Image (cartoon, rainbow, N blue to C red; front, side, top):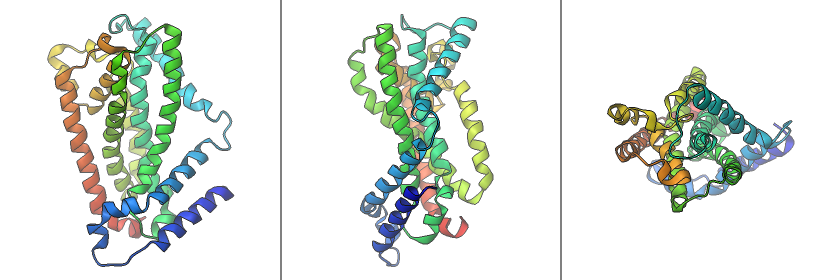
Length: 289
């Protein structure tokens, strides 16, 4: 950690320490009020994570562009040229793939960044009290920065291929929020488990690698037979990806409504489970970490 990052960590510790109020049961009764009270700490941690990610790197911000771009090329060749899978409507296959890759990279990046965030900030966790949910939430913002960069790249690709967005693009923020919620539930569960069981961090890459093939990233979910499509939609990321494609491609990639509803329900269930387990184990983090 460089001098500037150490200074920001010291500021975060000082901020958390000077606003501490010791009162029996206060952390339970006023938890979400405390989250809002510590919003400056959230800003400090977010800026630190973003600056550390892009400082002292060889290709810097270009990595956020190269990774999805190269993956799009590979998936286009494998699924379009080799497997001969169709693109929905008349949409160019690279646009279809990239529109599905955006939410998947957002999901996987938040899951990866947030799951190890508490362990990476163990010094801060041990020294002062603050709502611990601030740490994985701040780590998730890094993924949103990469996502914003990729949105610019998507706009350039649409201009290159002559794909004009329809009014559906106005609903894209709704599905961005849905993608964040879909990732935060599992991320909170994993980050809480990782505090107690350090080998959990080895499970995350497997989940990400396996998930990219069982999710409609490199192909359209329309190729799934109708009788299996609802079952396939039990993967909550499916509804998110389909929603993104619908926003980008319009009626060329229609939403499967039963699948979207099941995704919404499962996203809500996983978010509730993640928050519940995180809150239940949060009081032990400082002792275990």
